[in-house]
Length: 442
Image 1: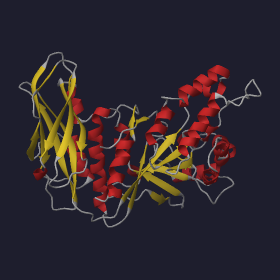
Image 2 (image 1 turned 45 degrees about the vertical axis):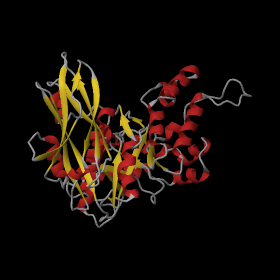
Image 3 (image 1 turned 90 degrees about the vertical axis):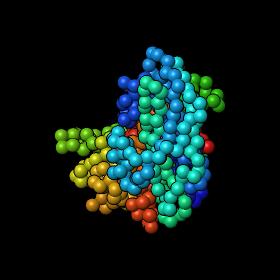
Image 4 (image 1 turned 120 degrees about the vertical axis):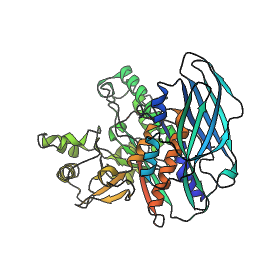
């Protein structure tokens, strides 16, 4: 795999892992762990993409959820003999406990005794001679099995393999919303209460701070609520002071972090309202129109908070995003939104965001990320499956499982049309409280 493509499929995934988004849907292994005291997780695969003849190192994490010691635990790694070629096959494999035809390829060296409530990691190495393929790339099921004389548990994952470049690159784009918290103190408070509210919202260790740290240095598009850059502040009591108030300092820090050579800014409507209910037949039409009329000039706000002039100018012509929470809008709703949000600028229509489940009914035939609606409006289609994986990364212990499936899904996307350059959009949940934890690929 070329260095460029390998980075696109690994570095971005591992460097921006989001935690505290929501509780992920349980995998078959996780559901089973509520009854089985032995919990097993795949923490890391190194390298994430295998090369025939080269060894693979697997790090697994064991946890004893019971109230008795679990002695003599050993972990085995098994590779499926039947390759996975489509997203439908991946879905069937991950949601089923049906036995597979496998080959035993590695065993942990030393048996583990695990006291109640304790966690321990173990390392396995797959000999490179077990990694074989004649294809340019493929995906094999990877199953870990932990067992002792009284209990057995398994977890299912993937081992992508690559031998040569016989495809056009698959470009991954990440769209991260930066929105305000539903805290009235950010707007109504004054003095120390306002400083406290803004520090909790955007100060060190906050949700916004963690997002900015997690995406630093990586190619990212931010969907920005412009009210983040326009705090409700009053001039300082001491007229001669050069120290800006806390909200102003924090907004300047936000601007500094999102106006970098690797970042792009797109605009959400102010306060990021849920668009869908504002377009229903019984909704007050003036509410949506008010959003369009009061939409602040993002470029001006960026300039006031220290953005480089060229990026501030670019923001004024950036797409205005209509991003409904349910990711689905009718043609009439799209027309209503476009007329309200761009009443004076018909040359820069609103860009709509939806996910591919509303556009591409067949999971094994996925179209491009950038499209047009039947009326000609720009439409961005995010990948529902990759979105779910990205947003499930809530526990560092399971990072390896998420990463390997993300790679498997992207390789099946590549396989759908390997001779054509493709773009894929991955979005963090709109309106979420995600806090990314940066990590570096090994």
